[in-house]
Image (cartoon, rainbow, N blue to C red):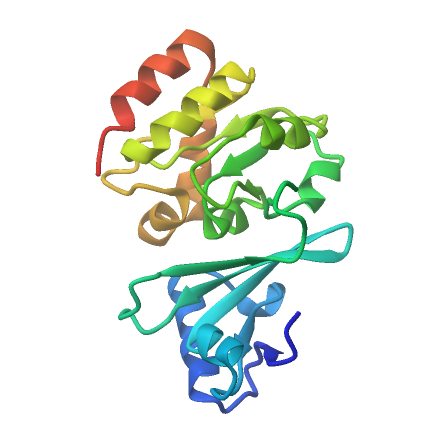
Amino acid sequence: MPAHFTPLSADDTDIWAQIAIEYLASRGVDFSLYNFFISKGCKTPSEVKWHKRVICPCYRNGKLIFYQGRDLTGKSKLKYMNESSIHSNSVVLYGYDELLAKKESPLFITEGIYDAISLNGVALIGNELSQRKIDVINTSVRKKVYIPDLCKTGLSPALAAIRAGWSLALPEFGGCKDVNEAILKYGSFYVNMAIGKSICSGFEAKIRATQLCTGK
């Protein structure tokens, strides 16, 4: 972790720490339950690069493998900025610990980190579901349920999940394109019920994904 990254704290008087906490609250995330950071200082190129972003790290076996910074200004052309601390050929996922969890409940897989946080699931960190990511996620013994974003870019990973033998959850969230957005609008109880009722697989999942993943 870069030395200028500071754990997010409610006691921090830094204006961007407070903005970061407010942003996470707007996403329905209790920052105190997770490891979020902000960058302090504006002298070195790295400090400037990560300043005014809330930073979410990803770990595997207790080791940092990746971190993502989300712009807090609303002005940056690059909303999300990523950095990996492992070889470029390695698989990066958010929520590796969930792969090892001994639970009877399904393993929910999403595109975005905040969606995965909402469901205690695993995030692809993007809309690419490669064979290598499939192989890693398949190390979990739990039933895999992929929840695509309901937009055009969500269709490709949804079809890849079907080919991998996974189920899909395709709840119609009344215009919301992803899990986190729906939870903020309708609440977690409703969203979890909707997800459970919408799980499908095989040909049915393919037809429904093709119909629903059509938005912008």
